[in-house]
Each structure stands twice: as structure tokens, then as C-alpha cells.
Amino acid sequence: MVEASRPRRDPKGSKSVSKRALIVRGGWEGHKPVESTDLFIPFLEAQGYDIRIEGSPAVYADAGAMTETDVIVQSVTMSTIERAELEGLRAAVAAGTGLTGWHGGIADSFRASSDYLQLVGGQFATHPSKHPDEVAGAASDNFLRYTVEMTDVGREHPITHGIPDFELQTEQYWVLTDDLNDVLATTTHPAPPWHPWHRPVVSPVVWTRHWGRGRIAVATPGHSPEVLQNEHVRTIVERGILWVTRTASAS
Image 1 (cartoon, rainbow, N blue to C red):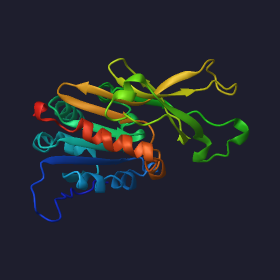
Image 2 (cartoon, helix red, strand yellow):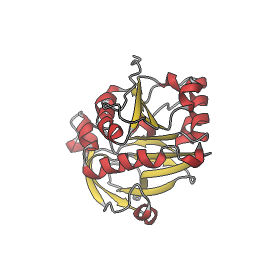
Image 3 (spheres, one colour):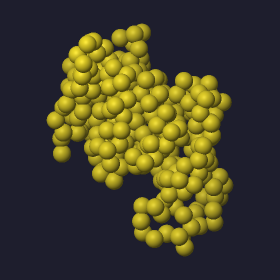
């Protein structure tokens, strides 16, 4: 279902809005893309963004709209993307439009598109489950207690500076990535005997990426609005939006 665009402007009309944010949401409803992205609309408004909301990636094929967009906040889990849409997205980011998102809305989008996966620099592989005796056939089967650990790079980066290592009880994403990423935080998957891997595996939790003149920021926590309201997760997402937003040098 495609959602109509809804431009938002300064409610007082007292100043022009210089930054334009595009929220693209949809895909699998289990990640609550509408409720999750709605959490950040007040933040965007308070920061002076003019907000457009779309219910599919079709807008990516609109070159005029993309040229005017300073930051894309994407929450589209799985789903598909047409060639013209993907080409428009890649071109916009290369020209300076920022791209950010969380969890499956960016790291598990458009699985069939290798060019999209190259753009964002990571693809969800799995979220390991609890002990088989605890598995009950519910979403919570994959909710584990795990630690998000800041890297040396992350302790200095504007997105994660001052945020301590912290714990979450939610899906612990195992993500396939490449060397172009600057990893700001990681998590370590243990090797319990009921899973087939044989040693702990470190996976990125937060990373940034430069693509042409554009910036990308990805955070893997965010399975539900409740996770996004964790103070550290929310701070990472909000700072990520600001950090990827088109800069004057990218205009």
C-alpha cells in the first residue's frame, strides 16, 4: 500500500525550512514501520526539517524529489525495489543525500538486490534463538540479552560519542558486512552448543559509510518501537539522522 506524501512545515510559519527529510516506510508489518518512524517525526520537526512521508520506494525514481532531499529515513523490511528506484537512490546518495535507518528497515531491505546491499554495506543474516527448551514459537524466541560495545572509533564519533556500552533484550542481529564500513559499535554472538557455529562471532551494531558525496548510518537495534525508545538507541538514531544529512560541501 502506497501512502500519500504529507509535507510538514514549521507550524508557526515564522521561518523557512532549509532541510528536507524523506521518510520511506513499508514492507513487512512486523517491524511496525509506521509506528516506528512516527517516533522520530517530532525530533525532525524540532530540528527544522520539512518532512515528506512515502509508503514505498517508488519516490526514489523521482529525480526532482531526490535532488531536493537532504536525508532519507528508511524503514522498509524485505519487500522489493525496481531498477529505476534503486538507481535513483544510489544516485541521490552519491550526490550528497544522506541515508539512515535501523534494524530490518535498512539492513534487511530488498534482499534480492545486490546493488542495494553494496550501498548500505550490510545484510541481515540471522538473529540466533534461545535454548531449544525455551523456544515457544513466538517472536520472543529470538529476544536475547546482549551487550552493545563501542569501538575505539565509536567512542570518538559524533553519533556514539559519550554513549557507554549498554545491554538490550531484543533480537541480536548477525550482519554480513564489508570493509568500507566504519564500525562504531559491535556485539558478540556466543557459540552455544545448540547452534552450529563453533566460536563467538563479532557483528557490527552501528556503522557509517561514505558513498560518493553522501553519508550512510545504520543501527541494527530497532525491532519494535519499545526498543527504539531505549535512551541509547534513540540517541544513536537521532544523531545518525543529523550526521548523514546533506552538508553544504555536498550540495
